[in-house]
Image (tube, rainbow, N blue to C red; front, side, top):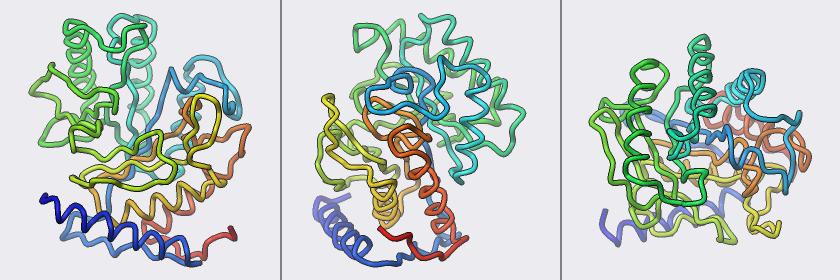
Length: 299
């Protein structure tokens, strides 16, 4: 995409967002089947790591680890929102964590019995070890495991170019290990693929839009000291961002996240703002799908 076109899209999105947030009603675009239909709605899901942080809030009900009960409750709630895709966070050093790997494999087994649950996409994150970048050998083991899971549970995964889709977290700006059975997408700003919002920004703006294949939206964002750089507003922040992203007509809109209790983007029911963001998201997705034209709730 030419720089001038990208700049035009950016300003157009900002103008339309002003109209969106200043009106009591908003109508989503008419999704044409000829143009591929509506964007896929993906929700980022963390089994470990940020899901287990408790500095900003705790989930309702609270939990320890990732037992079957939590898996089934999480996915039932996620499915009820109306999203059709789950970005499953997988640490890039999972090959070195036998117990964790076994839980992921159990997750896939549980998934097999639920045709109503969203399809899956791998979301590869920096490992849990002290070193942020894993060795090439470790990542090769990860790739082999991902391919094995994608083949064993082929019907569970979304594909791109006929291969299981794997999205790389923003921290992963390079990824030297590839495989013909996987199709990779970058979210790092330097790669100009999927548009993933920087964590430090005060206001949500899609800067330098170079590709609209994938666009991320957030329920809120806090820094390490607990300061809300992007206030949650009981789910209205996520609602407004979803509307702005829809105007770009991407293939994927990625809601980050279900349960990142570390950065403040969570929508799982919690001790900070209860069920508000989750309920509001479900209402907005019904509008997104053209299933409801209910006026917005009072701000």
